[in-house]
Image (tube, rainbow, N blue to C red):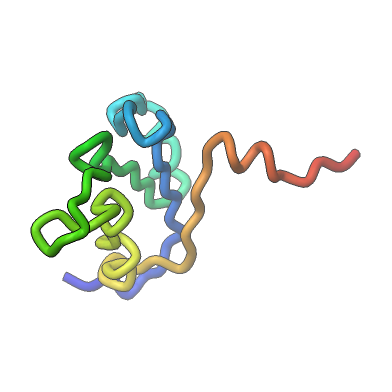
Length: 99
């Protein structure tokens, strides 16, 4: 079912240095808060450690499988995305702070 209404999408990609972490860290109350404001909240898991980054540089084990998961960005029109937001520590490090 394709949506005719467009919603902002916030994407959380957990930290952990590509070795540890999980999207399960989010409390349901936090997610409900975003949804109640009309924001689609997406928290993803990705392949980590050797499952995501081991390579033989052949077709059997190509490099960087953990970075090739593009499903969300390819499917955004199917659920009516108007924009994507990502956040994490890098967001805070690069944020402009004004008084």
